[in-house]
Length: 224
Image (cartoon, rainbow, N blue to C red; front, side):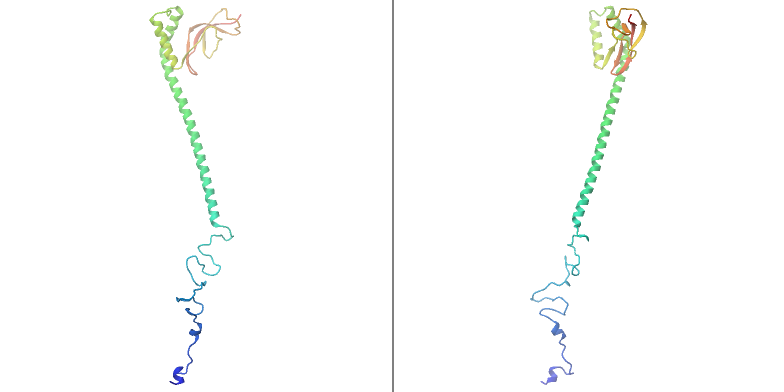
């Protein structure tokens, strides 16, 4: 074999670039090695999860903002602030609903009591003639004994359980709010009386709570 056969028939020099640029187990210069059992060095050319696209670049594991603060901390603080605002709003709504319920319950109870007094007052008004007869019979002494006295006492006791109260007693100071003066007479008044005083009850009055069903009809006298 001649020297020209060794180096090629055209006299061209062999291409040594690929041979010289190829390292152990590597490819062309500037590219990562492919395979091989040799030691593999990390290069910024290599991509992958969590790796930056270039030196100093941001990746998916960077959790800091541009000012160096943690974006996770800011998000947590904002979330807590929103929860506090929502809790305060819900608490205010609950307090308002509770106040409305309390006012509603008071109004219902008041209306119920008014309706009850109105119903009982209607019954008392229808029984006024009977109650006046009982009063007159008691003043005349007809209720000193006997079965009718027991019936009258039971009737008055039953009305008392419904809040019915009799108004007007001899010796009371005259009150135009509960008394109706039918006669003005001269009479001896109780000791210490300084104003117009009831001396006789002609027809007792009745009231239920604050509602006056009928004023007491009385005769009055002035102090001497």
